[in-house]
Image 1 (cartoon, one colour):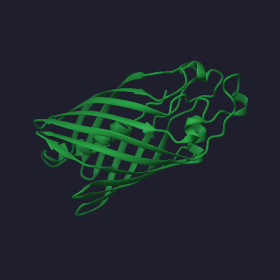
Image 2 (image 1 turned 60 degrees about the vertical axis):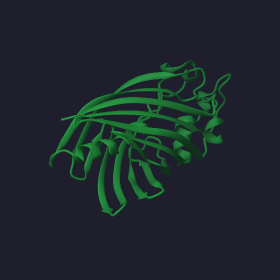
Image 3 (image 1 turned 135 degrees about the vertical axis):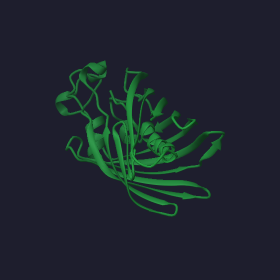
Length: 247
């Protein structure tokens, strides 16, 4: 099933901040995250998975699990980075009754860029990611806004975001091919969609070596996704609890 990494990706910035406090040179860490999510697939329900994570910080390069980031430009409160990540969306026929007779939908490797603007009223971000493996052959463009708060040695960021998913991406993961239709699952051609997300991201630091991440979010699907016969809910929720030890 889909193993969304949007919240895990947010931990990359937190690990970088923790690593910056260490001595210069390469910094690395290991950890894991428990992710519980319900993505709204018909008859599937909630899933809980354990995701191992390897974290590396070296100069402008950062890696956390399936996501790598290279900062190409920074001036004052503006950053621009190149980003590569695995999109762990997809499913297999055995993942649920709704997928019986369906072809597998695979993960992809997406590459693009992202930017961040820090202001007195909050953090603004944007990103553009495109499939480089000809899996879904689509792209996703996102904008976000968050307001960071500090609480002791922790950082809490309530945020909202909007993401535009291209027609090819939506059709690959939510469409139903003519040869896949059956009773209760009609053929469906997905169209481009706009998703909206609201959530809270939090990072808690203990000394120079320990980071705990606790996040919660809800994504409201656009009508082009909600209309898919594979989807029975109007959105998906996700909870993440993770730990990284920095050496």
